[in-house]
Amino acid sequence: MVLRKFFNNATGGLLTALTSNNNTNSEEIQQLEAMGFPRERIVHALNATDNNVERAAELLLLGVSEADYPTSSTAAAATAANGHNARDNNGNGNGGTHVAAHNEDQMRRAIEESLQVNQRQEANNLRRAEVASLQNNKNIKNKAKVVNKKTSKTPAAASANVIDLTGDDSKPAATISKTKRNTAVKSAAAVNAGKAAVSRFSNNKNTTNNNNKIPSPTSKTLSQTHPNVKLPTKLQSKSKEEQILRTANRVKPHVMAVDTLLRVLLSVRSSPDNIKFRVIDRSNANYVQYVRDVPGAEDLLLAMNYRRNIQSDKNELRLERHLVDDALLYLGISALEQMRESEEYKLGKKLRAFHAEMRRIGKGQKEQQNLTEGEMEVRLQYLTKCPKEPPVGRGAIMNVQLGDEREKIDGGLASRRFDGDDTLADVLNWLGGCYGDELLERLRSREWCLCDLNRYPILPLDVEKHQNKTLQYIGLFPSGKLGVRLSEDSWRDGDEIMDDIHGSARGLGAASRSMLY
Image (tube, rainbow, N blue to C red; front, side, top):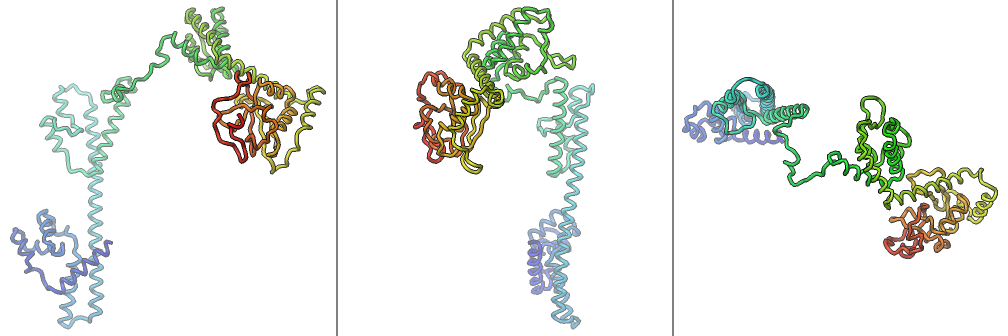
């Protein structure tokens, strides 16, 4: 685009030069002479601006020197054309071919000179911006030193020496005049660098104040920035009584944590002088498994005046003898005993007993060599009723999980392939061959239940009602994931599921949930 522009300007100038031999007697010169400018400067300005009167007047008014005038491609082309015309008229030229070549050479030179001038101007502007930025950074550092320096001057004298960085117009006249004398024309880069330096200085000052526990006058609190937001009081800021009641309420679903904490507090109350009861090893395996990661457990101990021992390398909680409070012990023991009567604790107790049964059954499946002959015969009878397992690549894998997956019951996962036309009775016979007759009896009595874990919400399957239905109809094909769970009271009592039976069919040809329940 730049070359095309210069080419057009050069062509236009050449045509103008060919039509008029000189512009010294033109109307443009007369107009500029009427403004009081010398004729020689007018001629240079017009040549530099392609005879544009307005641009030439701007150059003359700004007082730009002739050396800084932009090179005019038109003037160069005109000069070249005049020279060639003169030579041709005098008989010294070599013909039209040489004239055209000379014109092209002059035009190329004019374009190169114009590009060089632009590059020099850009380089000069860049150097000026860099110098201004460095000078501004130096001034900012000096100003920061003046602001931070502690002197014994009076407030009036100090304010006269400190240079304002905010640009406020309400400053004293002496300060304003001094600031104006030290302020020069700054580029955008210099202004941004100055703002960044002021910001760094303010941040460093605020950091120093925070480290010294001195609030910064410019920092704002949450109540100032969000006056309508009210944060709840921290647990540590509440009374001991409220801390104990709140933490005990959080612990109640965790049976082992409640029992362990209650046993610790009872031991401390019975023998407060025994150091063994007042020191808890936080690296103990049972403490890590049942207490440390339970929400509210350690907070309850801290509310009972237990403290972490930071004076030694031991990872322990210690209750000093002089911090043993009989009132707090009585309140903590009473709160934990009350939690043992809650529904959450009772349900947790049942789940713990259920998973203990699952571990026993899973252990029997893993250690089949320790089974009696009667148990082995019963399991073999169940396995003879199962269809042949499809080869790899056919059928669908059926997974059955005993209890909750988070319990990680050893031997509690069984897996086998089934075809889509196999029935739920085939799956039950396979489970009887893996885990024995006890599992099937408790499933049929609804003490335990068999749930489809691929559906949500999880609901129990009626093994008596659907035992002759195919796996595809039930929704366990092409993949099935069943789980043995503890039955709720309503399911154990034989009540039908009336709520939350919505949901679409799972798999091609599967029945909807409303048909299954």
